[in-house]
Amino acid sequence: MAGVEGRVIAVTGAGNGLGRQYALVLAAAGARVVVNDLGGARDGSGGGSSAADAVVEEIRAAGHEAVANYESVATEEGGAAIVRSALDAFGRIDGVVANAGILRDKAFHTMTAQDWDAVQQVHLDGGFHVLRAAWPHFREQRHGRVVVATSTSGIYGNFGQANYGAAKGGLIGLINTLAIEGARHGILANAIAPMAATRMTEDIAPPEVLAALDPAHVAPVVGHLLTDECTETGAVLVAGGGQVHRVRQFRSKGVTFAEVPTIEQVGDRWADIVDLDGAVPGTNPVG
Ligand code: NAI
Image 1 (cartoon, helix red, strand yellow):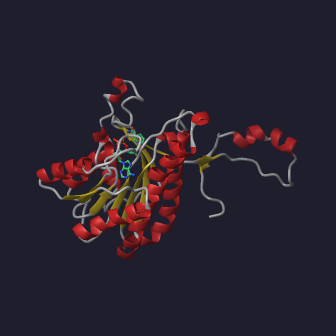
Image 2: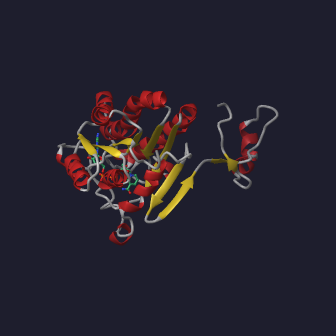
């Protein structure tokens, strides 16, 4: 196979915004798509089938293949049901785009445990549930493609997004290990940090900035990560408004203490410890 032709790909949160765009582009490129969306509001409240149905209708009207799924990614049963939709409709699952997301922005001093939990459950737990259900199929067929939706808020932080940034950072931790565990089984796992004008960002960025951020710019990057030809794994890509780049962790040269240092001795060498001149890409020293 070439590209995503004939591949079966589940896109979570595909009823709106970026997920919808991913589903449309993948279907147009020949993939068979599970359009998952529980149809809730931006904060995760409510639900319904119309968002997923509308995208499926759009794909079918264009002569391509898709089925709808209305489960929440936030439960183990929901994750399993999304993968089952792919198997029932198309007999296989080749890729997952863990894209479903909600926002509960609050400055940390006003953030409740509910605000925290709701966001972890959709983004981080949601990624786990769907990927965990797809993983045995990927291993067995020795082919799988994982793309998780992270965020520049997870990479760099953002005011009011401690819950969201933690979940998005967690997804990078997840794909780091999935890339290692998947390597022997033909499974690639990468993260996309999109920048796009959607209902999620409509009141966050000014209109002139949003005007340049059509979600259409992000979808081909996600599409590439799902192709048979892609060899990238464990990467974090930032994409939006035509700009696409990779971010990754670097480590400073650092300092090696021959003896256990005192707190003062650490302080004395601090400038050398944090100096990034000559920094190199970091790898796990105990992995
Ligand atoms: P959106 O709000 O337009 O779409 C998110 C979709 O996820 C909605 O259709 C919603 O119903 C669905 N969803 C929410 N909870 C769900 C659940 N439990 N189960 C199934 N579906 C659920 O948002 P947008 O902008 O398209 O975001 C897509 C992803 O990209 C999210 O993970 C978001 O955090 C991420 N992202 C978006 C950025 C942007 O610039 N728009 C920036 C960084 C990250």
